[in-house]
Length: 250
Image (cartoon, rainbow, N blue to C red; front, side, top):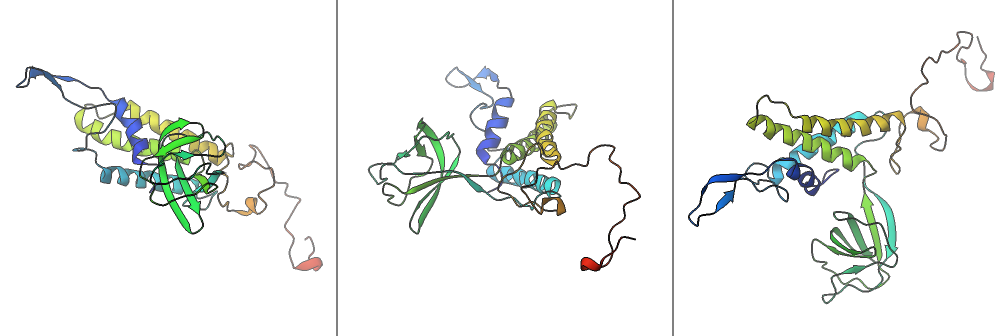
């Protein structure tokens, strides 16, 4: 699994194209759709293997761009934890939380009870504290089982999805259009690179990730990442030489 999912790519690309109908009727006298757009991709052109490949390329681009500030690749962290309100069994496949959480479709949650753990993707939000998962829950989870939502630090998923979608869109757009320029792909890259620049400038902090470099020995220090413009080090100050208290300024 990469920083984003196939569902993210589908939602970005599928509704960016245009649909059409054929000019001739079929055997029943109806005009058939040429392309199914809006809910799914054409599997004859863009299959899961292709999507995974472009997600991998996007993730490598993110790791390369941010590796000067953070240890890459990034890892998932828990951003919300609560308990199961009612037991989950073969007669009850709906997850009811003890307290509401701002969940969304496609969020990843972990169900934990003792040594048993299951990872699921949210398919439908029923109420702020009730949802259903894409796959069936295999194990019996009693009330008070732990429910954890895990995710990559924002906006890593946002960046990965748009970089991958831009590359996929340009590949098939360029094969069908002339000139081979996609303003939609350029816009996706602009959004993704804008977020990367905000991380590099320190406007966005990736919480839960390992920072690197001398500047981050103490992560509690409030300091901007970049050196202030026009900053000058005076030539009168020179580094200390020698060890311990016996070092002298020369």
